[in-house]
Length: 198
Ligand SMILES: Nc1ncnc2c1ncn2[C@@H]1O[C@H](COP(=O)(O)OP(=O)(O)OP(=O)(O)O)[C@@H](O)[C@H]1O
Ligand SMILES: [Mg+2]
Image 1 (tube, protein in one colour):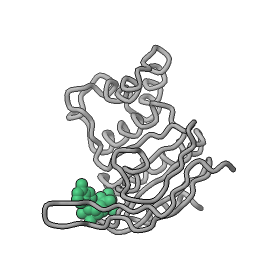
Image 2: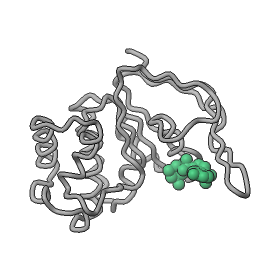
Image 3: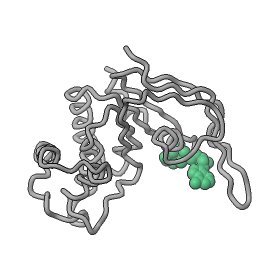
Image 4: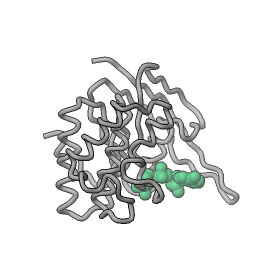
């Protein structure tokens, strides 16, 4: 397997008016192509910080990161962050638009994902008419829409009730199986990820 990401001795300090917070202290790990990696830990331990550094949203304070230059990373944030003024389809096309890559083909890909994951009747709806589980699925589809090599998933199931969580969890599992993506998934609940390993 190819090593696609390598983190060594990553540190992150946040500075506020009052204090300095050590969010990460000497984090090191490697990611190989096709792996499913979960980062499990209690609230505030720095999980989202790792993903935000990997996706270049924030800077590390120290350490080294090597990411294979051919790798496309897509990040599903902890909050679903759908834009209320965009339709479901347009929300899912956002990443593609930002990459200046909108064409008939990838628009069709997104529509087919929406149909596959039970959102056929909501393509032209707005987020406020969707349930929490549906919104989560839309956020996942938006993450997949840019055809990434690596998915960074931050608590993708946390907003959901138990029943929906099982269903969406299966969707994610199926997607990973089908599409052979490398995944780094963050959760505070080890029960959410254990089934990915059995
Ligand atoms: N922008 C910020 N400014 C200051 N401190 C921050 C900032 N973001 C995070 N922190 C602090 O850094 C630490 C790690 O935060 P982070 O969001 O990475 O935790 P987490 O493991 O994702 O938590 P949760 O499970 O609640 O999402 C926490 O102590 C948090 O208060
Ligand atoms: Mg978090």
